[in-house]
Length: 636
Image: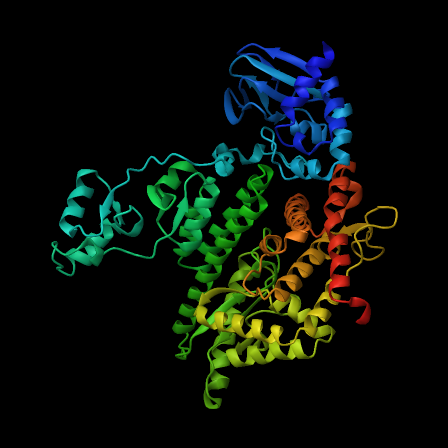
C-alpha cells in the first residue's frame, strides 16, 4: 500500500515546478518519505513566528491562506492553490515562519522532509534557481538574507498580484466605428458615462481612441462640426497588449509610452481598456504617482524628495520576488523621468541666468548599467550629450552651452543620490559632450585601433541609450556603429578577448575567489567576476549578430537564444543567471547600504554560496565558446 501511495504522490507532483526538474530516483525518494496531512477548514498548518518544522509543504487539495498578524488584524498576504509549495522561506533560512498558513477549506497537504528535499535543492541547479528567483508561491521572500517585510506593510500586499495574469477589466468598453460622426460618438460616451472610446474598423480592430479632452480641445475650442467623422479627432498613436498578461506588463507599457489608456486585445480584436484610473485602483503604492510627482516637480528639492520615495518600495518589490527584469524596467522608467525633469530644470535655470540657447538639437544619453536598463540601486552616473553638427564658428559656444547644461544636470542627479562618476564620464565633461560627427569619429577610432583604453571605452559607450532630446541623433549613431563593426570584424575578436579578461569566479576547488588585499579583502567581487563577464559576452555576441539596438543583458541573451537554436539552452541559462545575480546584488546592497558589488563571504549561508556557484556555470561555457569562436589564442 505504501508503494502505491508514494507512486501516486510522484505521479502528481511531477506535473508541477520544481518537481518537473527532478530525476525519477529523486522523485521516488521524496514521495516515499512524504507525510500526508489532513486539515479541517479553520485549522492552521503552522502559525506566525512558530519555530520552523523540518518540512516543506505541498498543497494537494483545498486552499491555504498565508496571513500576517498586524496588531489585532490578520492581513492576507497570498493564497496558495493546489499544486503550490509553501513554507519556502523557513526552509531556505531556518528562521521561524513569517506568516500563518491558514486552511480556508478542507485541505490535503504533502509534507516533504527537509532532510531529503534540501540536498536535492542544493544539488540541482534548475531547482535552486527556481527558489532563488522566488517562483514558488507562498513565502516568496528572498533566499539570501530573509529581509523582513515588517517595515514595509504600508506599501500594500497588493503588489503580490503583479505577476498574476489579469483577465478582467472593470472599466466599461465603448467601441465606435470609424465612420461614425463626432456627435454620435459623444452621445454614446455620455450615455455610458465613459471618458474615452476606442475607434475600430469593420473587424473590431483598434484604429484610434478619443477622450473627453479630444472633444473639448479638438471640437469645442476649434468649432469643428459635430457631423464630421470621428476619425478627424481620434488619436492614432495606440499601444495595445494581449489579454491575460501579468499586471506588471501593462504597467510597464503605460509608463514607457507615457499613456493614460492601454487597449487590450485578443487576436487583434479589442476586448477591454486599461486606464490610469484602473491602475490606481489596483495599486495603492503605484509607480505612476511617483512619476507624476517627478514630472511635476518645480525645483530640485521636490525632485529629490519624490525620488527618495522609490527606495522604500524597491526592497519590498525584490523581497516579494517580482521578477528582477520587471523591477529594473520600473526603476529605469522612474530614473528616466528624474533625468528628463532634471534636464528641463537645468535648461530653465540657464535661461534665468541669461545663457543664450543655441538653436541646435541635442540628445542626452545614459551609459553603463543605466544605459542597459539594469540599474536597481542608485550608483554613480554615466551619461553624455550628442548635439547636431555646427560650423566651426559656432562650435566653441555650442559646446560650452551643452557642457554647462550637462554639469547642471549632473549636479541635480548628484543631489538626488547618484554619485559623480569617478572617471568623469559625464555629460558635464567636454570630452563627452560632442557633435554627432565627433561621436562617429570616436567610435570609429576605437573600432579601428582596439587598444586597451579603446576597448574599455567601447564596453561603456556602446551601451548608450536615448533619454531626452532628438532621438534621431542616437538612431543615426546606431546605424553608423552597425556599419562600422560589420566592415571591421577583427574588432570583435579584440572585444571578445576583453570579455574573458576577468578571473574565473571559482578556484580549482570550487571556492569563491575573493580579493586578497585592500579595502575588500576576503570579499567576493560580484560585479567584476560574475556580472561583467556575462554582460561583456552578451554585448560582443549581439554586435557580431548586427544587433546594436538591444542593450539590456537579459534581452541580449533572449535575442541570441531566439536566433541560435544550437545554443538556446546556454543563452537561456545565462539570462536566468544574470537575473538572479542582479537580484542578489540589489538585496546585498540594501542590506549593507552600499552598491552590493562586494559580498562578505563569511556573512552569507552555505546555501547562498551554492546558489552563486550554480549561477556561474554559464560563464565557463560561454567563455569557452567565444574562445573557439573568435580564435582568441591568436590574440594577445
